[in-house]
Length: 332
Length: 294
Image (tube, rainbow over all chains, first blue to last red; front, top):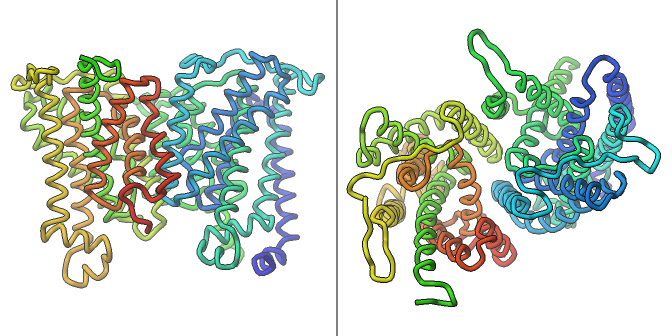
């Protein structure tokens, strides 16, 4: 294990300081944003997706496993949380925990299956499993089909924090997001994260060094599922809604897009990608006018596709990746 | 007459629907397998290209009056050419990269195509008039077989087996298989491999478009028709494994029939049965029924 750790360990203190500084700046911006006139509901949506994208990035950016079915974790947690809070009357913290746990368990089962294949097959299998879950939720009575679970009560967090207040809800989301974000950073830069990267780069070599590659991949998969679930659970409480949109394959595609656009395998990339995509979508709901042409929300899917194509053809490092590369060139 | 308490009429009716679905699974997974063999990418746009084929046929009939028979020839060529353009301008830049980028690019293209068609024609389906020759049904004694359904099964079998024959039994096919194994060496023997790759992609896309033309009189021609189908076809591909052409054909038809039977015995599971079979196959034989680990 020492051989893998050494290069990272020497650069660790400086890198940790930079991360702490950048995270502190991000936290400060998030704390001030609602007072600078930015709509808190928009921020909460973006933060939920940012956490979802960060969780996804753990798998694709550091594990090299491209899942095309991550919506199943977001949606499953959303449904379980909404059901627990609304039908069983659970307090929000218990409902969120239940949702996250459900996604974690789903992650254990689907992870054990999917890591049996790699690359393109892995993507197709995750997509197929997510579609299976979609049909399950479409038919299961407790999800209320096309309507979804509506009017989920936000309730009082730990019995005394009233989440019906938008700002209180917002800061709760900020705290959850930052906790998840820092946790994922710790995972990536732990010995576990280094082994995961080694497996991504050269799996046979990692195996010959004695690492149980499948076990590492499974743990990464489950962690990613759990945090995606956390994002979905919080999202259900924030929007008081769990619907089929969150388990549909377009949602799985959306999170891939966020990470691709922000920068795969970068720490801040998924956050940037999530904010950009959510912002574009909110602008599109109002419609964009170019000359005499009017593009309404129904064009969102075309724009999404275009961003995919442009990113893959010309912009593979993503926004944060390109900035990082530019910084390195600039410095020396 | 009844079998397992199910009226035979219903049983054979669902079996027929299963065979029809299977015909489309087979043609689409065949195209995916051919493309994957040479390009090493999974063509996510396949469903959108199938939809384009159906729309193209509908457009020919409605706007120019060109009927079904000509559409069977014109549409695969036209849509195949759009495939060639996509391969030359975009996919060709990605061969040296991780194969996953091909998946991401074709996913993006599928969204663009589907979105543009949805904006142009709405999400409701357009009916395609059944050609006069196919109106009516054969009485087989135990059931009625609509003429067009019989034609779809026959034509798809001919196309699938024809593709199998060309790839596995002709000189051209041997070049193709050789280039799949070792493109550099085949190029050294004077075969223009990049052109072969381009034409292979065009051919695979043409197959999808042909399936679209065949589907037009059966299903409504709608922008979404390919999106859900392609995910099922992916599961079919995982079950069969992409190692063999015949494997793709057999798995396609077989799973269509399984799906039809599920509709008879336990209709609630008919949407998910193929995914469940995929899970079982992954547990028992991860490489797929006809696949080789590479």
